[in-house]
Image 1 (tube, one colour):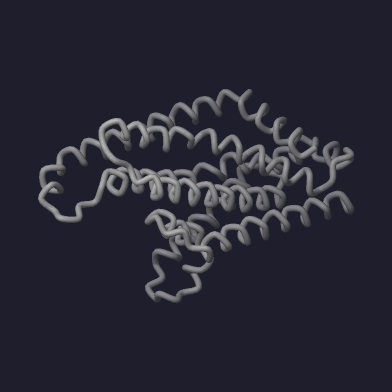
Image 2 (cartoon, rainbow, N blue to C red):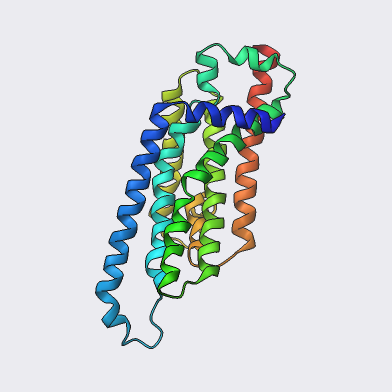
Length: 247
């Protein structure tokens, strides 16, 4: 039943004209950043040739591209998560969903995986752009795969948090603003924290993404993303369960 609800979410996303506009705009931004980074790499290539251990094209183009996408999705994901539950409640269809044979777990996971599949398809062009460079140069596949894994884990944390906040209100716009405020707040607090052992570093998703960005597969960072995502999914289930009992 989870996959059926996920497919329903995918269909509803692709039937909205705004989705296609966002997809087109994002692909333009991705391609523009990629081509500008490629041109910058070609401009400094003579200087890089004189260095003994010069950074490769993957480090100069690939990793910054993934970092840009991570920041961009922090702003964009709340626009998609705001409608997952809040819009159902505003349209008065949530009661129908809660009265269906679906369990709370199936509803939350169905909506979570539906949006995750959509966002994964959205960013699929990133590794394709970078791997197009393999025709003329050597790529660090390990660094690329590390960045891709980190990005997917980061997206999952964004979606889980946004989904939980969407269960707290009847207004999608408020849900989007709330999720964006939390994500940006964690990011800014992480940047402002100067102490190496600051607790803000420990709870900032973007901070934990940085190790993946440098090609370091740290199990601690992976566990953080799994716990962060799981906690907010469980909170969303708890909130929706209260709606079923008392609503």
